[in-house]
Image 1 (cartoon, rainbow, N blue to C red):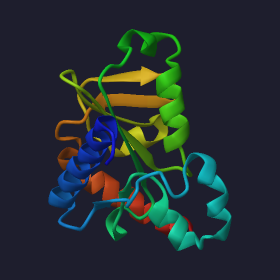
Image 2 (cartoon, rainbow, N blue to C red):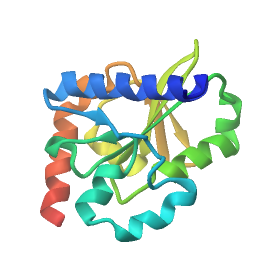
Image 3 (cartoon, rainbow, N blue to C red):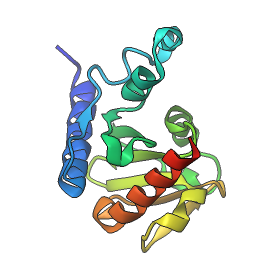
Length: 167
């Protein structure tokens, strides 16, 4: 039986997949055994996977064609040191390192009884609409998760299509 922390993370991944499915009217699902197959000590397994298999196993959410150029990493934690976002947050840096891939990725964070947030590279902000935000290390934007997908579905689709044309 998974630990309570693992169950909490799985639940957050399912919630994010549900939000995305409703917004884009496509099927988003969490990666089975999210992170376990290619994460950590199993990183060597990536060498044996095809590009499609790698994309499918990358991140915590399997994305359909409307977001095929994106990776989505989810984190759900009890606490988070917000004040360290103004200096250097080692926890956040570790999460970003896990999420970073290619150009298009999101880190979706839920902090118990505090709120939910989304972090992405600053260079993507041109495509998105959001009100309040925090710049972290001049390379990332952190903003509220609430309504982010609904407010930015068209921008995400445009960015996804532009990325496909580059390939």
